[in-house]
Image (cartoon, rainbow, N blue to C red; front, top):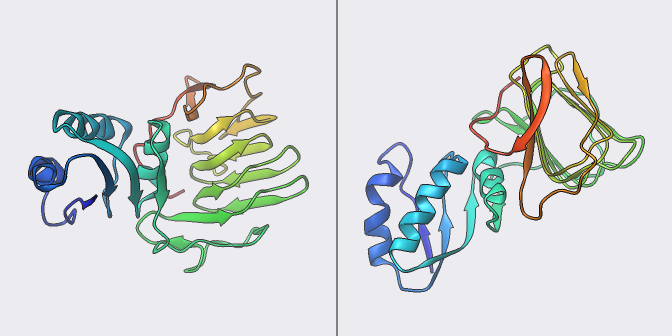
Length: 219
């Protein structure tokens, strides 16, 4: 059964989730999060409510990339609703995002497709890649970089000098990471299945931790 969280401008989801679950059929639920930007911690709380009601969460859809990445980091099946514009094709070049490649609410450039050796993708904002970034491919952004797939090429977030930028991927095993002016190699160990990871800058050093998406930097 599908349930939809209330409009984020009208009522907070925490105030309505118990009633929504009470009125839902028992069993597995498909959750439509709409425009809610949910963090990993928010999803932990939401999952606890679902489990306490005797139901299970089967899948999640959202209009917000932050929520989708948080859900995947939690191990949930999640997808971005196609009402948010997505650029198709094998490669986008260095032009700034247009109405067709970004949304005003998130300031994110979307790219759908695998980036292969020799490909170069750049945005003055944040970038969300639906696909892998293969060795020899490069992604640069003034904001954050999110890869819904394997990051095995080169990624440079905070290209304008932002030390708060992050690099997030379902498998974070790049040839090289850069955040602002800091440079690091990717980890050599195998990633844990179902666990997204993020690289961030702490005291001038790039470190890798389990991903928790709070909000995307506009750049």
